[in-house]
Amino acid sequence: MNILVTGGAGYIGSHTCVALIEAGHTVIVVDNLCNSKADTIDRVKEITNKEVIFYKIDVTDEAKVDKVFLNHDIDGIIHFAGLKAVGESVEKPLDYYYNNLVGTMILSKLCQKYNVNKFVFSSSATVYGNNTVPFVETMELLPTTNPYGETKAMSERILTDVVKANPDFSVSLLRYFNPVGAHKSGLIGEAPNGIPNNLMPYVAQVAKGKLEKLRVFGNDYPTVDGTGVRDYIHVMDIAEGHVAAIERLNEGVNIFNLGTGQGTSVLQLVKAFEEANDIKISYEIVERRLGDIAECYADASKAKRELGWQARRNIIDMCRDAWRFEKNYEG
Ligand code: NAD
Ligand code: UD1
Image (tube, rainbow, N blue to C red; front, top):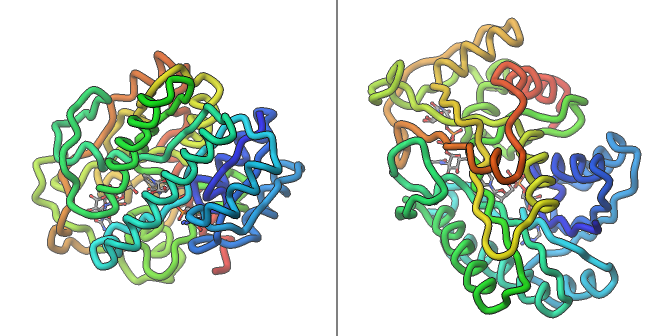
């Protein structure tokens, strides 16, 4: 298939491009590089030894995106392009609502215009809010605590309504849990701007000596050791989940959790990182972070049953690959 990948220069998008190419698909990337670099595309080419068509375009620029649809015979689209920093979304809500919602609307409109009937969307486990774990696709969505999360819930609703009005249009809403790690080549990975908000890149930067110590946000949650529990999933497993989702897209709206089904606490992750890489990680316990929930992990059985996909890489693989990338990364 010819697959349009928006946000394909980003963290999950670049790994998905590798997985798509390895599965025999052709990718056309659209990215405005607001949170990524063009050399990531070169690295995808280096890993796969294949061409990648790249347009530096903003997905909210309808006229330019229209030309991409016109120039290529697109079979399906995977829409990653979006802003994703939770804290920033609270400070700049309009940027988040504009970028994330207008992008989704323009792309689904162009899909109707050019008769592109396969659409895979990057949603997030954040749409479950404070439901009881494990999160199952059939649960009622609860309000999220920030505009970023709301853009995911709203995009899901927009796409669902577009399907209702256009029965030939099929959508897959993929709710990611916590993507971490990097491609085994160490050439592409997660390279956040500034001080990382998320746990794994923070730990990797402590390992590198860029940051002094990890601050563990709370050890009084009702969890195995009092620290927050999450479902970390290797980014290449997430990438392969997208290949399965677009290849096996059924009619209508398809919702899948992309998680491992396994919860890991902050301290368990620190220990796994130390073991995997033989490096000591200094940490201190500090106050809880506002907006955090105690536990978040998936019921991952639906994707296994219906897509034949399940995560294959474990927490040690995630820590080893995250560190291999961070070690080599000069950014
Ligand atoms: P990322 O920031 O690395 O990648 C997003 C890419 O989209 C970047 O390359 C950025 O330059 C591009 N982009 C943003 N706005 C754009 C626009 N208007 N036009 C064109 N390009 C634009 O983020 P990521 O971690 O790879 O996340 C990809 C998607 O998955 C996002 O939609 C994100 O919200 C979602 N998601 C991510 C996580 C996570 O933990 N990383 C979890 C759940 C959902
Ligand atoms: C974050 C986002 C969420 C998004 C998810 C996946 C916030 C508030 N939420 O959630 O919307 O869907 O990423 O990308 O940013 N931790 C520390 N010290 C740190 C960093 C994190 O102790 O320096 C802890 C957190 O309290 C949490 C766990 O590590 O228990 C994971 O945190 P993080 O990587 O930020 O992911 P989420 O909290 O799941």
